[in-house]
Image 1 (cartoon, rainbow over the protein chains, first blue to last red):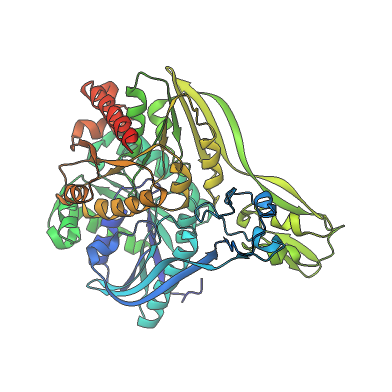
Image 2 (tube, rainbow over the protein chains, first blue to last red):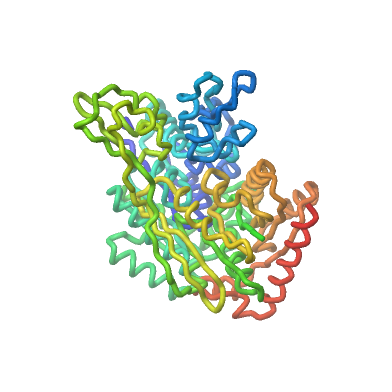
Amino acid sequence: MQKKANIKELIVISGKGGTGKTSLLGAFASLAKDKVLCDADVDAADLYLILEPDIQERHDFQEGHTAEIDPDKCTECGLCRKLCRFHAISSEFIVDPIDCEGCGVCVYFCPEDAINFPVKTCGELFVSETRCGPMAHARLGIAEDNSGKLVTLTRKHANDLAHKRDLNLILTDGPPGVACPVIASIAGATGVLIVTEPTLSGHHDMDRVVELANHFQIPAFVCINKYDLNVEMTETIEAYAQDKGVPVMGRIPFDPLFTRAMVEKQTIIEYDGSSNAAQAVKEIWERLESRL
Amino acid sequence: MIISIASGKGGTGKTTIATNLAVALDTDVNLLDCDVEEPNDHIFIQPEITRTEKVSLKVPQVDMNRCNLCGKCQEICQFQAIVVVGKTTLTFPELCHSCGGCMEVCPENAITEIDREMGIFEAGSRDGLEFAYGRLFVGQVMAVPVIERVRKAIQPNKVNIIDAPPGTSCPVISSVKDTDFLILVTEPTPFGLNDLKLAVGMVKILNIPYGIVINRSDLGDNKVMEYANEENIPILMEIPFDRQIAENYSKGNLLVKELPEWKERFIHLYEDVVKYAKKS
């Protein structure tokens, strides 16, 4: 990714879903100055629900192809069914678009040229204005493929926005997991903040994203959300992170205020900036900012 | 019978539902964790693993003594996984979808396939409960081949419970397709509702009967409930926020074992699932 040397990009990830990535990123959006926001969780994009973006630009996201058999040309010779490794062609010679991998092998070998191979529109990309700054975000079509490419493209739009507006910081909300979309969302980032929770699952999943960040040599930081649901586990996770050389940025208490803020379409800072939860988030942001 | 558990939004409680349902039932159950990026069910089940296999994908290997650099492989490959550069043909195994097109098209028979390892499949049991899961190696991009390996462990004569990954894209589809009933786990928040609607969109495309479980049902608003009523989606269970539940989850404990009243509730959930699955 082409990047101006002084543009910094922080990605919030978690491994495990539902640890509070988006609520935390929303709070950072209220705290940080001069930044671009980016929602790279294209499969379940939620940041827009808090920031209510005013959409300025829409772009179709076109990627990959799906095979379609033309029944008028098809002689039902069966070669396509023999070659298709994804069992996407029925005995009636109809392609199941969900099973079709878009490999084009059937298209290439069909002796009758009976298979069309149109480009798929599998999502939409937006460039918006929000009360917290400009934002790049996207929506992957339901049951679609290629989320990694849409993530890369969304981040590119965020980067372009940073260049155009002369902003030096990009705050990106990442997807859960460790595979394609996450790898696409952290590649080339300045740093990742891993949001975890004090549960055995949270610990297990954090271990895997720490490994992922190390694999791609991206500096990682960690914070523990809802830390007071199991203080002992919080301490175990912090010790583990220290041991792995991942600096701990802080703890956030369990607080239904986060949910109430979300219902009111506000960040926790906007909803109740003097609450303990908001103070904890502020401290985490200050520590992070000084290290980026 | 195959019941899958999915959610759209992550962290809503798929693992809680899948593991507790599996343990609560007195019938023969086979629990399959298809969230191969972040599998968690084994933490709660603590299975004795009796089978471990590598999961691999067939990727091309080019014999340069035979390759005439014609470039037909590059032309057919939709994923830029094989490219002719100067006097050599390079492969990029991590981009390969294993369609076999390059091997098929090569006029010199210069391409064979080798296994590229991408994850682990493990199976075992615990107190009569059969269990299988997959683990994608960290750094690998494609989860679907590992998910498909886990799905091969479906046993037609048992109640199969599939724990799917979050989201609505390809890994979720591979996990839940061709199942008899889908339980969508959600929470009554704006994020929960937004992602529930996406998940419902997916279920409609796949045409699977479904119902929802509302977790932490007292933290948030009424919009999920209103949506379910408008769309006539059965609400199978509501689980209020309870520190005791959260603490047990954090330690890897099963609700049905720690708080016995939940065993009945999960058996009841299963009976409802069977009822709704039959209706459709």
